[in-house]
Amino acid sequence: MKPTNIEELHQRYLSSLKREKKWVRFYQLIIFLVFFIGWEICSRLQWVDPLIFSSPSKVWNLFLIKIQDGTLFIDLGYTLSETVFGFILGTVLGTLLAAILWWSPFLSKVFDPYLVVLNSMPKVALGPILIVAMGPSFTSIVAMGAIISIIITTIVVYTSFREVDPNYVKVLQTFGATRIQIFKEAILPSSFPVIISTLKVNVGLSWVGVIVGEFLVASKGLGYMIIYGFQVFNFTLVMLSLLVIAVFATIMYQLVELLEKKLIKNGS
Amino acid sequence: MDFLNIHGIHHTYFTKTSSTTALSDVSLEIKEGEFISFLGPSGCGKTTLLSIIAGLLTPTAGEVTLEGNKIEAAGENIGYMLQQDYLFPWKTIEENILLGLKIGDKLDTQKKSYALNLLKEMGLQGVESQYPKQLSGGMRQRVALVRTLATEPKLLLLDEPFSALDYQTKLKLEDLVSETLKSFGKTAILVTHDIGEAIAMSDRVYLFSPSPGKLHKTFDIPKEIREQTPFNARNHEFYPEIFQTVWKELESLEANKH
Image 1 (cartoon, rainbow over the protein chains, first blue to last red):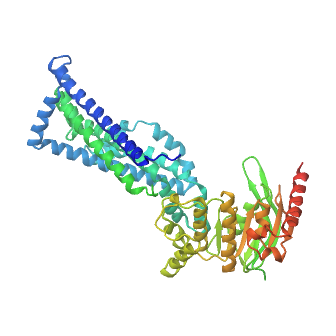
Image 2 (cartoon, rainbow over the protein chains, first blue to last red; image 1 turned 90 degrees about the vertical axis):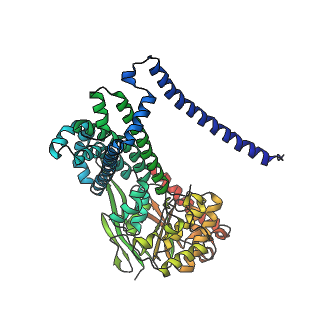
Image 3 (cartoon, chains in turn yellow, blue; image 1 turned 135 degrees about the vertical axis):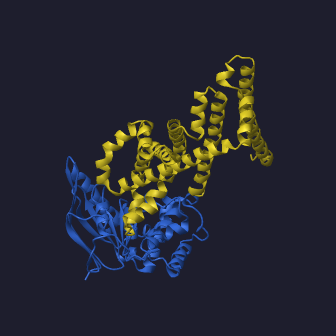
């Protein structure tokens, strides 16, 4: 027997989806409010040391002051451009390196142990050397942001290049494709999903590299704000910097997701 | 002079621990416009031979000539169709069927309209801007056929192209492929392990025996069956007899192995 109220059932299903979405949003908002209100209350009532943990109202006031005198924009501008450059450089160079390794199986065999060593080494430990070599400048911090993600990008992307279904390559070979054409038509596009997911990881990594770089150079930027606030025991400044970083790292991540939607087309 | 001449082909695969001879002294000739099947159990080197003919693999010994020219690299003269469609999922149907022309740098308006017209003849009008995922298995394999034919190859190599399809789709597609190839007068080699398919579609069937792959026997399909479509050939009065003969040969190969 065919139910007569299909239309009604469908409506009911849709409204149940909508209701669920509303509840998810509601609880997300609750968590947000509880965190900030709780933080404010704990700080006001001295349950936590307000000197160390500051409070949302203090951070907000500092935020307004730093916007009015424009210093926040300067620091944010520095850090953001360093991170974006480091991120792009790390991803592009890493993918390029992966392409070279794919191009020459011989080279990939030669470089294999070095990649393993470089990957296991903590890259931030290279910070002091970079700063001495390139000077305490924009360049050395960008280099930090890039170097931290480059090797892992190479390894992950190279692995995905090699895992492309050989039958796609065979199709192209039967048309007499050159190695460059095979790379362009099959290897690279079928690795886009993997490249995008390394981009997502690299967003976080670049921020780490840049912030550590700014700790070391200590002249400007959000990382400098943190280390300065720590040194003069102004934790309101540290908290403000952290929150700004959180917001902009999230925005970068969202942009990568937007790119993902643009880049990956398969009719779904 | 024969259209395709396969002479003294011998191929051995090397691995770290062993060397395996996949093909041993295979020679045969194919005339223009013929439809040939390579039939045999798995491990008899059918696909290896096809790869050699396509120029994807260099044989350890022997040579293949197409119209008197030695085949050394893959190229536009030969079209190859795989077991599955292997349409590129990130390309639209139109981009997929024009891929071969693009690779060979032969893409112009005339060739493009030829390819799009082929798509129409295969009953696939209006799917140009869709993605492979949106099509059914049979439709996708038809698109793959269009992709192979778009470069107007002289010789078509079909590597079990129907084996991944359900039976009904397979029968329909066999008819379509057979008709299309006949109307274009294309020469084709079909690799299969399906006796019925080999008999119904071909002018001649080469039976291979395994380890190492050797040409075991040749069956000429009578004119009466050749003139039928693959679907009708299966109902022809001569069909069961040929089927039995080929079946017994295949069985004897199995028996020899044990």
